[in-house]
Length: 268
Image 1 (cartoon, rainbow, N blue to C red):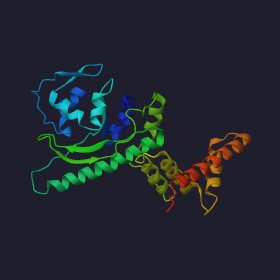
Image 2: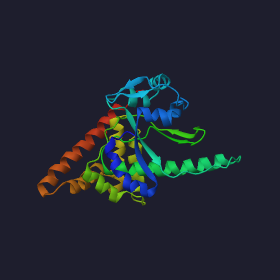
Image 3: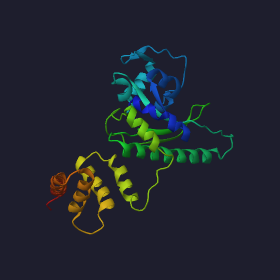
Image 4: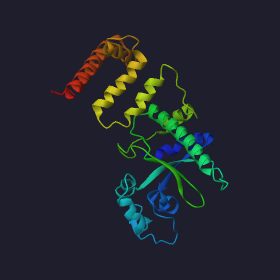
């Protein structure tokens, strides 16, 4: 997850719902999670390669694997303090060796994916930041085999989501195991989530406008006016500010929409 270490402040509340954030430096990554980049666990490998300002050691096998791995290569090989933020489920489960263990594993991973996606949504709704997951994985404790893995779209920056002490305290009071949507907010939430997988800023803007439209617009026309009016009511504290804000927003929404439509017009 591309967040800095300030997100560790959420652990006291997350642990109550079965999760915790862990900061993993390069040496710990090799010791416990090298299988993610297809390097078998082996405590006998010498850690001769020193990386980052703290000079954490990794083996030559892991260094070669990281160079050809995105986004892990960028996280470990090109950062001043290399490492990654891991969101880990604190409880485990046992498999029996029976032929239908894969059903248990898939069900567990499906539940894990739904819960993590829900938590990620709450973080995104709370504060601006390109917070995302590079991948989700499930690893067995004995054989160290990755039994399930899901890759996410890797766009955006690394580590730019951070929390102050006051923000962490406020967010801790808001986080829940399940974010509840209603009929009014469901479409807006779905479109909001989609924007994090869209690299084009204009398409992002149009998609986010659709979020606002689904919340504010009850009619079939005057979308730009309705969205601008409702946002202005939320953002303004005086009548004069409201008048100025609604005009700025109305013009901006209209101009971006027209620009996007013109850019996508093709002459046959």
